[in-house]
Image 1 (cartoon, rainbow, N blue to C red):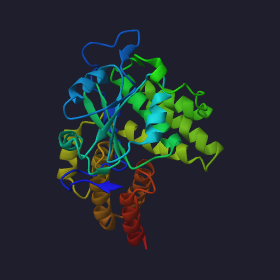
Image 2 (cartoon, rainbow, N blue to C red):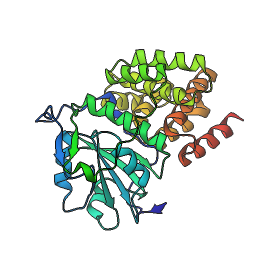
Image 3 (cartoon, rainbow, N blue to C red):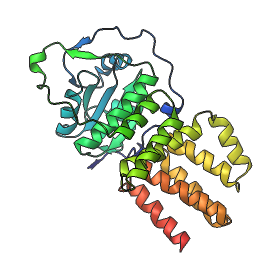
Length: 306
């Protein structure tokens, strides 16, 4: 992985879940019923042409892959299998400093997205194809909630990669949870993930899904300003600090959330410590066990426990 100038923020593992909790209003000019023609499903994005690419984000999510050298073949392959549900813009980060700064790219490869003109952080580094597909499924949920439900079709179908077999369907409870999230029914999604875990306690995707949708449910009717004001007024109240930590994780500020709870932890009674430990474990599932920030936070938590 190539590190970019230090002025940019690190995006690793930071999915902006706040967009799912508080969906953006549907963009002006809803997409037409038919596919919108585009030159290609994979385009080169530059500082000069990105405004035109951005306009497509009112029709489909625009996935933006920043790289130095060769763009990700895996990401390109996955995008071209999605039947025009996404556009991929590949961006040479070093050659396009304005875009690098606008998306706060700290290292490459970094993958972000734009829906209805709104930038969203996705992930850093290379992911296996199955994980990229899962990220795009979550992006589709966000797009639907933001009113971005169109499709595009390449002007030259012969230039597009040949269609490949449709991916394997999700397990039944995962699909039910995904559908429930799409319609904003977080309680139903929680129930489906709990059922999946009861049937197979080793189902890590269900564990991570439960942690994520539980976070969304807690924040569904919350106001950011009110949560932050309550936390500032009661710095020793675990409930208030847990609520604002949820807010930080939902916006991708996972280090702030980890630091807040780990600094609070030694001051709490046993029930408070149990609540904070449980919430941190949920955050670890959301961000990813291999993320270096999770590794560091888990090490700190272990030191506080023992």
